[in-house]
Image (cartoon, rainbow, N blue to C red; front, side, top):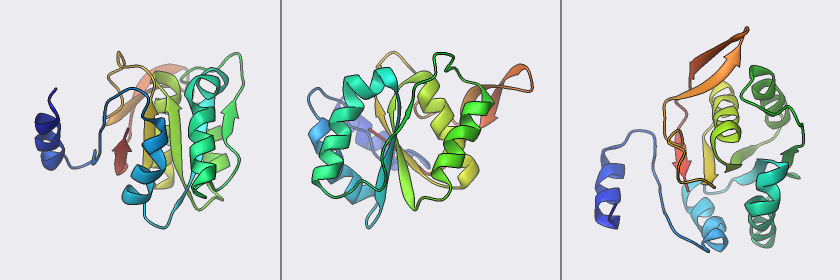
Amino acid sequence: MAKKEIERALNLANETKFLTIGTNILSEIPEIFMKEFPGKKGVIVADKNTYSVAAASVHHFLSEANLEYESPLIIDDPDLYADYRFVQYIATYLKPLDAIAIVVGSGVINDLTKRASFELGRPYMCVATAASMDGYSAFGASITKDGAKQTLDCQPRRRLW
């Protein structure tokens, strides 16, 4: 999609307010974060794989810009999947922090963080690591809750990377 088309779509959007696509652009995250969330600090949410692939770099750039609130939440559970208990885990970590979640990853970790942020009434930022995933700007998250896969509502004010 051409940059002009993206800008037109974002002007019409109610929730997604920023999108950029490219390679080697992780160093731009602090500038984008400051513009989109002035005066706020961020906290990274990632799994062990996405931390090593991209979130460690994001952590470095945020730290250099003094935008990091807390140590990243790195979920290192071999059974990590889109289950509501992980939404609760992330929400419990984020709740006492005056920070915006910056999720680094794709499907599962994005849906979990999106839902946790929604439950806390907060926006979040996504550093997407897989172009093949279509749920970054979706209004729902596919989460297993009460033994059944469900699409749970998630309509926080979002920023996408």
